[in-house]
Image 1 (cartoon, each protein chain N blue to C red):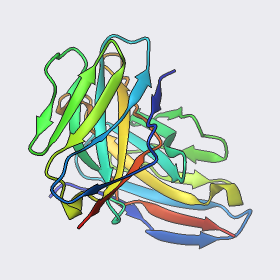
Image 2: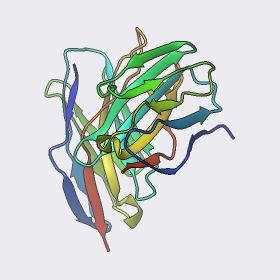
Image 3: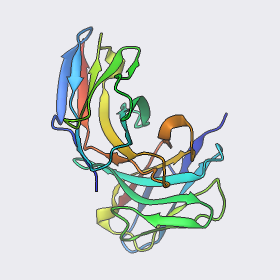
Image 4: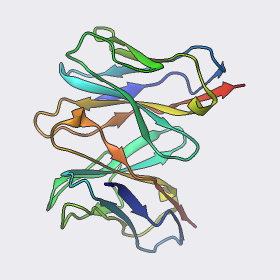
Length: 114
Length: 117
């Protein structure tokens, strides 16, 4: 069955380290998204991509980067991890058309920055 | 920019009863989609129901229905015959119409619903 996976599911790192969170989908969706979820803020968009080689900043993109070299993967990199980036991170994907815009979410990655 | 407001941080309901979660939004767009997502303790985000703004008829999915008031920019979720498995965080979300590659979701802050036995 097609799915969207994230790895690792849990990660503890230290301030200043570079961290990469993986997202992989097998639906062949063009659109992929990264969100962070924090108590009292809901889900906020970090970066998104509408296809290979396309990347765009969301509302909370500072300190994060993404690259899209193929349809299936959108890794999220924290260049120099900060304690403020301790959060739960969700990856999502959607089709260009059809499915009326539904986004399918991965299981999330809990990141702790010490 | 769009904003989505969920004014009830927490709610509780007795099993088998009905509960309504509120959501309001602000946009200058005329065509858009609205969604309710459920996030149980497992953390998985699950689509509950969607509404297309150009449709006047309120969407329903089994025990879940919405009251969509476009002029008032209101999009409430009604859960009938509440079940223990409905205990979750519920997020209201907005998306522009798919024209022009506008596929981003804007979420509210969520309402934590607890169903009591």
